[in-house]
Length: 172
Image: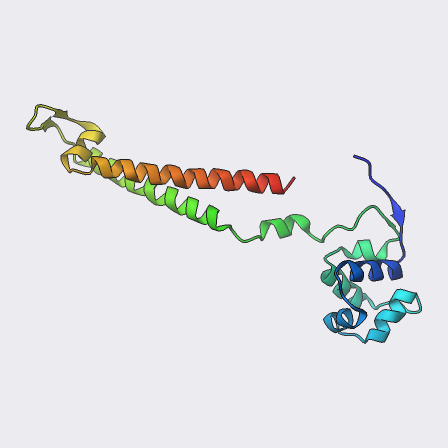
């Protein structure tokens, strides 16, 4: 990957970033608490913003203060990019998938523990021998319901995996 280096002074950067965001000088001035004339002076190189205003510009433009202050720049980079990625809200698919998988896994685990604690051993009326987990479920008449619970858990797992893959692709 070839990185292009270029030189750009603070006045050019302020004007470039403002225009990139589609802001007028007046709107930018309102956002950071200065007059429109101050923005004009900064963009024309007639005055320089105070450090506090550099930080405000950095936050407004979503670029680092290094990008604004240094002349030799490769590309503007958002400040604390990895921290911003970690703070993203969980998608509804992740939440739903995790909930479905978690609840179904918990139900199956509780049923399995009950089958271990209260084992079933016997015969049904048609001669089928009941033992173990499936025997426990069959004896209590919840064998088919357990299939539905497992299917719901698999759907939840699929939602989790597809959302994870989507997030990985977006972060490349």
